[in-house]
Length: 355
Image 1 (cartoon, rainbow, N blue to C red):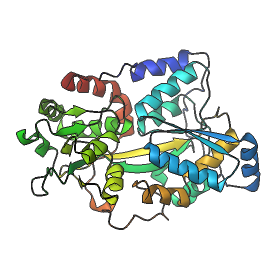
Image 2 (image 1 turned 90 degrees about the vertical axis):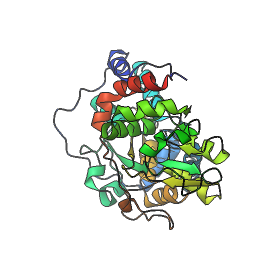
Image 3 (image 1 turned 45 degrees about the vertical axis):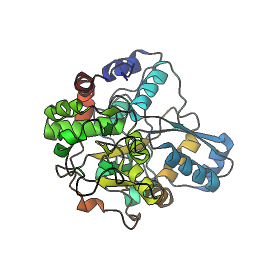
Image 4 (image 1 turned 135 degrees about the vertical axis):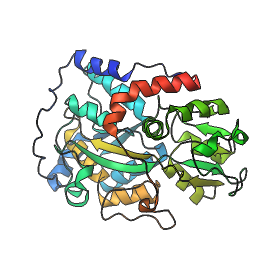
């Protein structure tokens, strides 16, 4: 499964060489705009537009649940969900903007590095939801008010409890290299998934590419999305997953599926997915309303409780029974390094896994 798509650098060239000219990269930081409030006037204007288009990398059932909640809260506005892997979203936006197509109202990716590129190319309009201004840490907001960290989650190891005893389960990335896991591992692809791209960077940085070279000899089942390994695990198609969404395992485990989460001893990759409003959003009022809703305590709590995700919103609580983030050893997130090294990461990965 070799993703047939241009590299990140090629897409960047397409953004600036297409039919439009985007704003020049910001040379100095501007003051963030005043917080955007949900007012009766904004709601009425959004209803007149009648639609909000959301490009998102969050798992489809979570995205659909949020969309239904938004539509119930604001009747008369149809929320259209366009769900894909983070890397595919990045490609799509690049291709659409190069062709002067502006179809998305709110843009979210599972790869925070994409927002560095999109900001540099002037795609976003300044907009800071009131909840972001009041309840989010400063380090989780763009200083120019162009985007903020909508969700946070982890890429974890997992295993099927019917196929693997707890005492035999891997406790670390190094454990996955044991010959006993030959032909029993499933993992996602960094060429499709922003989550796996970020996790691959963090693991290769901390453990070296030698880890992936050895892992590739384990006859790994290669899938695309970071949501796929948990599903293969629950079905019993593989005994262990080398990477994939913690939140999918939360969902499956709480439904009674035979899965368990492992936070590797070397550290667990931390993934942050921002959200922003494009300046050329076709439904600008609905876009701002949706962006405000996505960052509200209501939507964030829904995302945590139903979706199994984590939140930076100060008023949102972890669901009981889930391990708090503060108790987990985490790898360091570095979107700028991911953006710089993305094509190299894909090349290394393809070299070892032949996909």
